[in-house]
Length: 192
Image 1: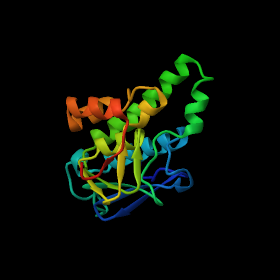
Image 2: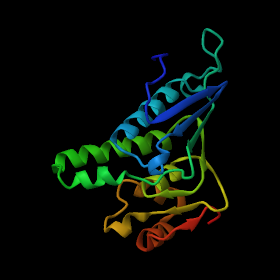
Image 3: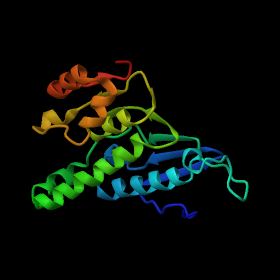
Image 4: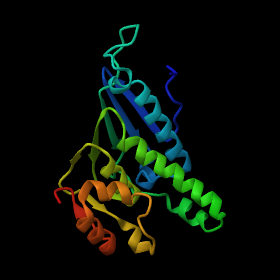
């Protein structure tokens, strides 16, 4: 287990005792996920998993530092996460099927790493959580949302299926709701 914190440029990892906070810091694009942010988030999730009480089975390391029990995921600025960066999606059309499959696998690794994280995970959601942002919301254990927060499986508006986030959203909200939200691609409130 590496004790060195992951190097991040598009997100920030803060530690306070047994609580880790991962903040997406691309507020100028509503924290939309590009390949670099996805890779950084996976690296942070792997590092926090390795330093979790659930993984180590002890509360503190040999130096007395607390292992992690809680992971908070939040977005900087007005919005939690607008999903995939539109430039990344545009570029996908020029990529090979193999490259697109690898991108999808990397994104699935992100969602699976969050879904299966041994810490209790909390999503602090504001503004919008669209597409992949809704996938992140589906992967956490508990969601705290502002009253005006809107969540949508917005892929339908682009003529694509929510294939990568689908299994996680389906497990969270069930078959009927998943099918309804996928077909309508409309925004729902955090209360819903």
